[in-house]
Image 1 (tube, rainbow, N blue to C red):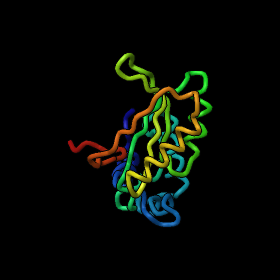
Image 2: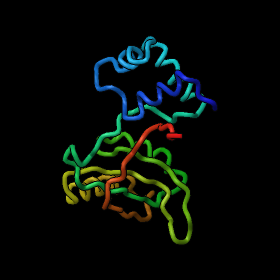
Image 3: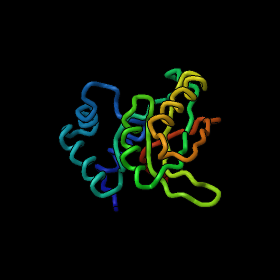
Image 4: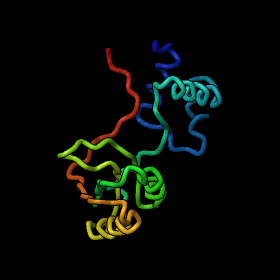
Length: 160
């Protein structure tokens, strides 16, 4: 998709994040000489076209005190994984939960849930709660703790 001048300006204005103000789209519109409605409409078009996947907050869990971050992986019966995954994804300490294909025999896990806690003990308690929720539908699980912080970035325009 070719970007026009407005698109390029909007990407440049948002590539470090949305303004942290009560009405961020209106603030962007003021910066770009247009309305907040025009900004919202263009972002909605980008989502519809697949240029942008989603717009959302990306918290820095470490700065919020959540220094124990573990991706739990679960081997769950295929017949139950969708309904159980929805229940797990709704829990307040799970930031994201999704289904992935197995890669047998090395990787039997098909359900992933990211847990955040102030300590590994807290994450292990959360994991125990998930294990109880999954019950007999779960055959095995592991937890993979974060060891480095990866910088997440949004849409960028490459300097030419």
